[in-house]
Length: 108
Image (cartoon, rainbow, N blue to C red):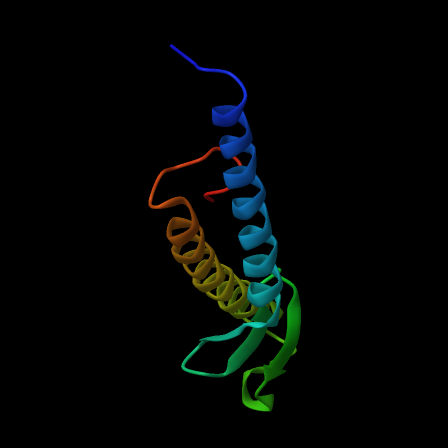
């Protein structure tokens, strides 16, 4: 059975510490970047930990006015690869904070 006062205070302190660590982790994640490519490096993208696209590089050899769809597909593939890399970094960071416990809304 739950004992009042001190137990609740300890729980609140732990929650505050975890919240602080999460905020610090989110700030650190925002500073991280990943690079991903598609088409054998013909399209390269850089994305930060907030899943914001920072840059995109397209080799001119892949720019074919008669095959725009291929270029579009390569861009999508590179962006999705970068997003997956960021997701894996986020999952790793969050599991470190939560001790591997899946918490809805935290673990992606």
